[in-house]
Image (cartoon, rainbow, N blue to C red; front, top):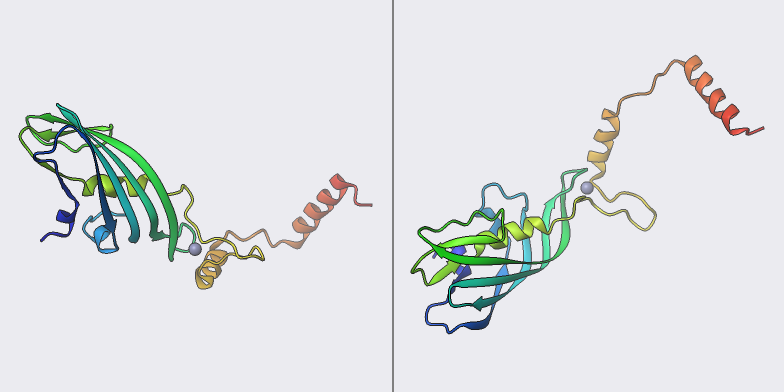
Length: 179
Ligand SMILES: [Zn+2]
């Protein structure tokens, strides 16, 4: 069985109404998607399926954590996610899961839907803008120290000419009336 086949919801024979489904996502899930920014994860997915006469609504809620590369040191960093959104499934001539909108199309007559792509996309939507190792209680970065040193070494060096530096210091001193 294909890994993502675990994420198929069958609505065959269901009356109109509301149904609950639970799924778990583990590290292997993300290896299925080539372009995944997320390296791995461990989270629960709660789905409420609302079956209407001509459409389906999927409320998908992700809670847990994912591992992604740190923006600063590139080592893995774990981020908690808690994200909920919905997908409206309408029926048409062919299946189209382009999720730039909340609407997707499932080929008419299909009795099941694989929600792995929605889980994958929602997990990425759930990521914080800044993904970095947190500072410790002393305010020190917990990033990979070797990487921090390399970054430090790559910083553009200040002008080392002592006269210019002295002039700048003098200027700062004058502006702040330290005397
Ligand atoms: Zn880091």
